[in-house]
Length: 493
Image (cartoon, rainbow, N blue to C red; front, top):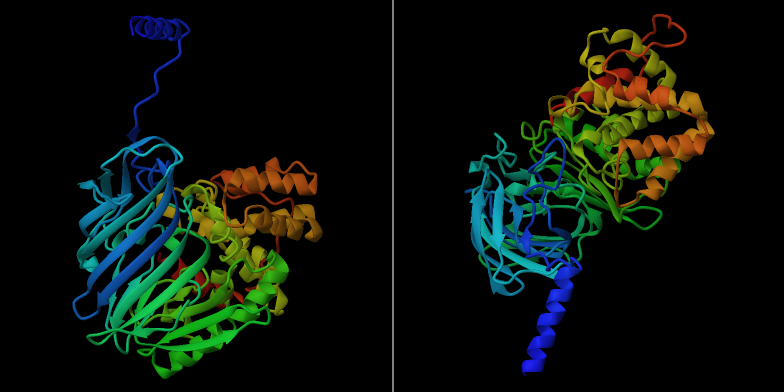
């Protein structure tokens, strides 16, 4: 025994002499994922692979009760970690043991497991909760929207806080199962496919189930509850098309909405020829009740639209825009919210290409019109698309100047290289995240050109770029009235 003690002591002294450090103690996961615009959004220390969200919702009282199970992996030795969430929590289990939890700030839930978690270990988190989402304020507002017949959980850059606990940042994608029990006669619509038909439960409730099979960002996961008319179809390649229209729409709005949204499969088939294969298992759209949603959002597989987009008749421009996001924003997501032009500039340029396809104005004509009509001191010129700031996150520089940047790139490299760049971008970053720097590097690699001056002028300089040749006073292309109306509403995020 004495010889063993001496040997152990000698080994310890030897290790100390060689500078081998003792193993670091488990530490808390960071309360933010590192976004430059929203530093407290998302969380550090773990990576989510799947959410199972099981809810019951009563429209009359706006009462939501739920259990969300989160499957994740630890990226460090964890003593505790955070979730983003605002509803009232009754219990949390971590790896089958009760955990303690506390509030921090307006949306942070700090969870301390009964046992520390080793880096690389699997984590199962079960959160039970309830509350009235419309009564909860965070980041200065309430993102949950009550409607006359239900509710909308639709928003960007945040919405998850009001209906399920999460690691709320697009850089941590996961698959989803969403199951919602609502009163009979009410629909509950979410992303993806239905693994089973709605099932009648006791006490006058029906359970709706949805499954997202591909990685999905938290803000792109939606819940729309109300009374909806539903149409279903199957595309030529076998994917499901599921469209829904609020029963509160007046006949003129409903007809205009259907004349637009029912063309989703046609539009996404065309977009597939431009951007590459459609990246998800389902398609479709939801048109919400009047006076509730003020914008459209590219929720993965199934955008949601304000009825206002169809007040002047059919509007394919918004359908093209939101479904272009299935590639740019949903499949290839931003790594940092500063890179938002990679979503909105590309979706806006898709509208220009649709206009060109339908002989309603070429992309060049739209570019010329915008360049000539925006005053030199307009925000589109005084804001750099590559760094718009949170105040201009959904401003003209991100949408219109972002599209103008892509058109200048197209002119510089030619159509063959330009569309190769787009298809390569969506293929190389499929289901992942990317940055402006990665896009500009890809454009230079494929074109073989030095494009620094172009991108510096159009993406990074807060002033109006100078064109090599002056433009004649252009006439508004035929498509511009619809595109302009669409963008006015899209800026209302």
